[in-house]
Image (cartoon, rainbow, N blue to C red; front, side):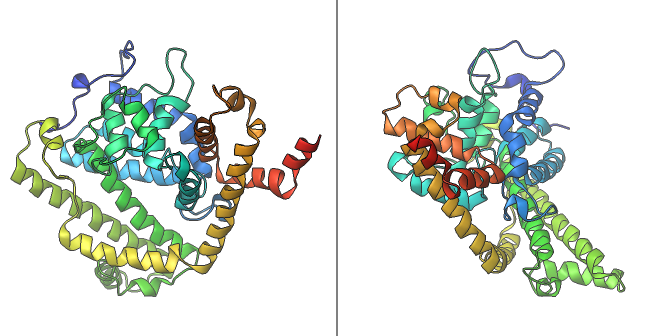
Length: 388
């Protein structure tokens, strides 16, 4: 049953470019389908979540992470009476703007782009779906509804202060009301992201042998999960025990969001999606108690996984890759693919050139960035081409 404050596909604020809508799909279903079929979504399969894509077949990539986020988001949206298709569209699109090598690649690209207003992966996601995807004759981008674009731009909360250029450019044409809160569907997608990565990073850290299962026994939330599993299944092998513990941990996070959000809704009594956007707070939340416990787990992951020596070593290597490719393309834009180089309206404008280079590098997969680094930098093909 849909709640009064869910987003109604029949009441959408529309698309920047009017279209004849589908006779058998809602506008939000159509948005979701366009996201699934876009090039940027496919490239997520070879982009880092924590471990660089080629390090192992079982580690999460940005694509598998996005699918897991969408699964959690659908569950939460269904229980809360929200529009499942809009929730899923935002969840599937939320990481489209990530460059290769995860947050390490983003940090490097942001430093390199500092003279040109920086780089932000959330803003880049909007740039991708409104400009860089070019599959349609009538418009650039995917021409998603206002509601979906708002969710992509604001799923982590209001966007205040100076806007990233990639977001400001579109917002000037199609006001996304960035200073306010997003729909409940977008808020669900944001919490689903937190649930998914906190759970699967524990899985991946164990598989990478960065820490042992027994080290998790004393962490809050997980300690109770261990007690339940060990009491019910005292003779489990280690592998199955791990999965039983983490699936319970997953459930604890989901159930807490549902319970906490229901309480907030009961207190606020919103009657429309407008009431959600003007509530002055997010309505989809963890409880304060769980959030406090979750921070302990996040601190553990930060120390033992994200800053583990082998992870740091790879971070340093891939940072060098991005820091070598960016100035090379900036100095030699002719090394860009023909359609990118020819698409530069003003090849002498350093800002336009830098943003084109950032678009190109951020769209790379891990493997392609490493291949280009080897070809152009290590093998010196760029210098050879210049001398010829």
